Image (cartoon, rainbow, N blue to C red):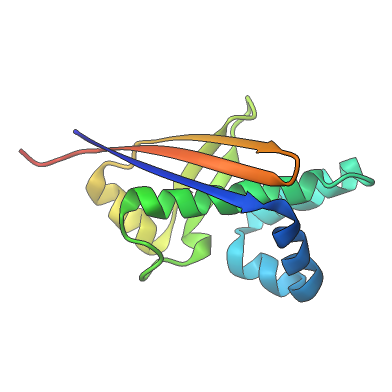
Length: 134
């Protein structure tokens, strides 16, 4: 078994600026329906603060970290092929679709993900346990 690591950090105001500039077009290009729903729910509940934006920034960082751990970059993989879901416990989980799912199934699809944020930054750290043919 091989271990691959990916990490990424995002400046949260950058995500806010992208939403302000491109709105739904940006959200639909980068985030799955589940991720968008979580954003809208968090935004509605938090109203005055930016909980929804913080979650989107963390997911952006996680998506970047996932493709770094895959070693593929975004070649042939769409942003919506990598989804970051929240488990019942609140812990994040990596779900892959499309070209990313094909790659993940071939490689073993075993992910560990940690998200954090502080002030204006969100960070993601991904560990991928890859099955290796002997």
